[in-house]
Image (cartoon, rainbow, N blue to C red; front, side, top):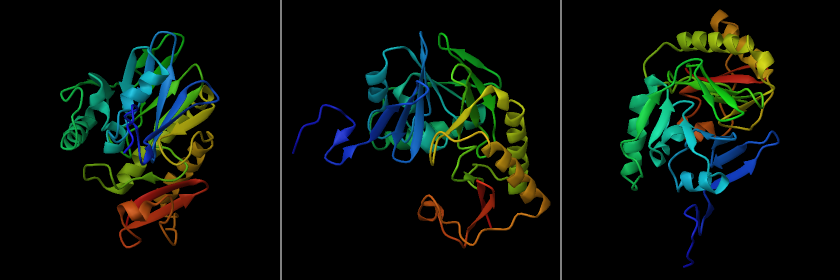
Length: 268
């Protein structure tokens, strides 16, 4: 059996892929989730920490030796399980319990650097100065109550987590009981909020299913929300797409609502 000095490479291949974007920052892909590494003159920012596989911090430190600010778009396990590689993480207050549970679940499988890492609460409008690069946190909780998007004012890029993507937005995994139409109302309000600032960004980088995507997805999600709320949205014949049924269940439990390029996956 071969010996590997990179903790993210084994006989099965590499856990992470990393590449520099055309606008100068980095995408770090872990199987089905994109994390992002933004680099200023003085600091870097890591957006999301994936599922805790391998050693994400090793990947980051191969790219930059700057101090790293770590943030979560939200705290579902596939965005926060790697948090304990750092001593401090910024996340929405509503996501603390989920983040701690993700760390606990990971610790049952492996040791982590900072099992009691500190969580600082994000606030709507909070700005991080990386040195020549200002990144603003924008509260957009719908898919998850703790969700924040991050706007890089230098590259005019919006990092949307799971609240806006080209595959689908999942509205049945929020974490607390809430009528899904109430969640749709929240999503609509968030998209209208982003629409009001659309002159500040040129592209959107989601956490799943392709990146970057165009800003006109915002209009399609606004149209989708309105169609769901006024009762004109009709469920698609199947929820199949992006491997969803294999992960969450089949047509008997879920339905896909679609408008233009946007779609929601909702409970039946």
